[in-house]
Length: 434
Figure: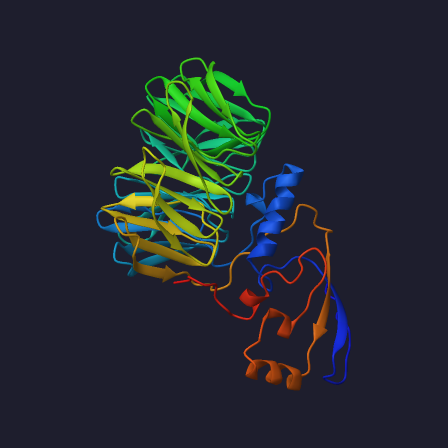
């Protein structure tokens, strides 16, 4: 419900507005502010993202095609030059990366279903229902497709028919699993990380962290696996028994570590990208971005990572020295590298393709909705109040002539959000936006 003050002329008038959060009306600073509320409460906001054009996934590739889902409920197939081949409509948002195997692409949707589509045509082969939103990436092993659900289960569906074969109960919502040597590794809600023997269908071991596992995957180096956590630790575990080999702590949540050579890379909500020695956990370098740093990885002798500051960065892997950065108009979570190109989806409703060597834009593709997705606050009863000062048209014209037109020409706001993001509401673009 929204309440507006009433006025009957265009003199300067103050109006008090009290409204529930709506990302369609306001800008990125409110979005980050809402995410920070989740950070403070210790809750996850991924299950509270609404329908909009935002893209949180990175594409996967198959025979000159690329596949990704978006918050507009569509799953897309493009060629690698950005031309759309087909799209498939679900009844829920799609937040995580897909998996491709033998001409089929697998993904989950917020409509509680796992899907398998034909890569060439986009026709549905099957869908498998779960008891909650499937905001999960997929793992494929010996004819089984594994995905996590917010109903606190990991599901395995038959690759050809979609029939449910295995259901693994856990202590919290799940957003994916990784298979290695017949063992399934997963963990997110509840702070428990699991190792499950697929052939024997039994749990091998569990590891309990202090807070949720950052469950967007697992990385391996020999018999060592690496995971992040919302308590601020990166853990190196013996993948045979789950014992802790070392841990490296920072001041905030750590996202998925990736391994290249003898180095471990990861990002954190403390705004830094890190490089550690894979064997000892000793810090080699760190680089500070302008906001949360998410996916960090090395490819072809360079390190790439995305940040909520709206940039994709390219770094030297040994020194952490910046080579280039590319600016978007929204926050970023995942990046893919393919054939000397960098691909990533953005909260600004676009999928991007850059030249990996130079960081120059090759193309971008906009999803079906140009309005970014809303994020519901942790408490649904939360309201926001702002004092808005409407200016008479004569005042605005006078200031435009002086070249002084600013956000406050349209609305002066006071309070928690203090006018943040009104430029987005008015259709203005940030500097450096492509």
